[in-house]
Each structure stands twice: as structure tokens, then as C-alpha cells.
Length: 319
Ligand code: MTE
Figure: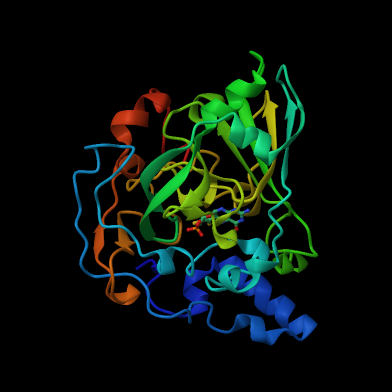
């Protein structure tokens, strides 16, 4: 039986095995054994009573039971602040999010470095309630505020050579203690095909639950791509580059057999170490361990909207 990464509270099972091993090795070598303490000892989040609406009803605002704000902000992946689920909430207060600027580079008519305020002034704020499904087997339902990525791209007018969009997270060791550990090849990078980036579901979040985006969730700007595994939703973005060739992505670079470029949620393609057929929905109140396990839907329930982007592709090969 493949082991489910969220089956219990041990760090070993919520951290990719190779990261865990590498960190133990590092911890031993650097005398930082304490790093291997339970990463999930972060309270008692998530729930047992969840209403599951037809997810296709309104793709922009699912009516499923929301995840509690406390849970969405205390059980996070943001490896720049540590690999434990509680580390981002503990350390992300060090991140300075104002002033913030975004570099736009590559195949576009307008490139340069732009102040966040100027970008916000030129984009339309919307609210989206999306399911976010982590590759590790848990999912949340979060009300985001932000703007559609396609609005941002239109401001810079990518040329016809721009086939992909590459994103980069800030990498500042003074603010991000996790950068001391080579668990990923920093900075964190991600990429989308240009048509994925232009899809109206693809959001740049600047807030959640009606509040400014908490640092641990990727302030001040993070991507949300609801039909892809959560790791595509890159946080604290400082650079967007329009490119001709498929860009590198952090998880694919780290573990190419486990994480592909596309990373579309697909219950038919198992992660090499566990099944992706079901997910533990962290929503409502209650204990995370009792959270209801529900079937995972193709494209995370957004197949009607996005399956056509992949027509003719073998999604077992392009996983
Ligand atoms: N972005 C950066 N820069 N660093 C990360 O470690 N983790 C990813 C993604 N974006 C990550 C990141 C993963 S694995 C997931 S599941 C989501 O963020 C989690 O988002 P959340 O913490 O807001 O739920």
C-alpha cells in the first residue's frame, strides 16, 4: 500500500521523503536536529461536516463549505520559511511586503520593474472561491481576492514568441530562514503555458477572506491555479518572464519522476508514492484527522472549463 502523506501527524509523512531524509542529514551535520520535530503540531484545524456542492455549478465561486481562516493560515507549504506545515505561520512575519515591486521581462512589448501599487491600480479586484488541492492529499476551499492574471499580462503585451510564462519567488535569506537549507534549488520557480496563464480562472491573489493576504499564504502577490496541484500556486512573486521555451519549475527540477510541468489534478495518475484518487477536505470546524475523504475530480472539478486546453495530449505522459 502506498503511504498517504497526510495519514497522521508525523513530519515524516507530510514531507516528501527525500526532503525529510536530506533535512535529517543536514540537521545531523549542522547540529539542527530540532528541525525534525513534528511539523504539524499546529493546533486542531479542519473539519468533519462539509457540504459538497456540485463543483461545476459556478466555477468562480464554489458553494462548498469554506476552510476556516485559522486553518488556511496555519497549515501551509512555503518552504522558504521551513518545510514544516507550521513553519510559515511562525516565521513569515519577517517578510517585508511593502514596498514591493515586480520585474516583467522577456518577450513582451513592455518590460521593466513596476511598483505593486501601480499594478493594483490598473487591475480589477475580484473575489473567487476556489478549491485548492495539494499534491500531498489534502484540500481546502478558500475565498480569495485578487485579479485575473490575464489582466496583468495584457498590460505588458506579450509578443507572439511568448509561449510560456515563468514566475519567480523572492529569495532573501535575511527574511526567509528556510533558504539556509538546500531542500529546493532557490529561488522557487514555476511556469504556465501562455493559454493557461490567460485562462479566466487563473488568479493573482492579493487577499483572502476579505483581508490582506497573510505572509504565510504568499503576500503580497501569489498565483492561484485551481485546476492544478497547489504547488503550481507560486507565492510572493517578484519576477514574471515571458519565454519561448518551457521554463524550469522547482518541483520538477527536484523530483522529475514525481512532479511534471503540467501538474494538473488527475485522479488517474498516481503520485509514484501514493494514490491521487481521493483527498482529505480540510473545511468547516473539527479535527484535521477526522476530515472527510472525498473523491478527487479530474482537473480538481474544473474540467468543463479547462479540459479543452489539453485536447490531444497524453496526460499520463504530460503529468
Ligand atoms: N510557493 C513558494 N514560493 N514556496 C513554496 O514552498 N509551496 C507550494 C505553493 N506555493 C510553495 C509555494 C505548495 S506545495 C502548496 S500546496 C501551496 O503553495 C500551498 O499554499 P497555502 O499554504 O496558501 O495553502
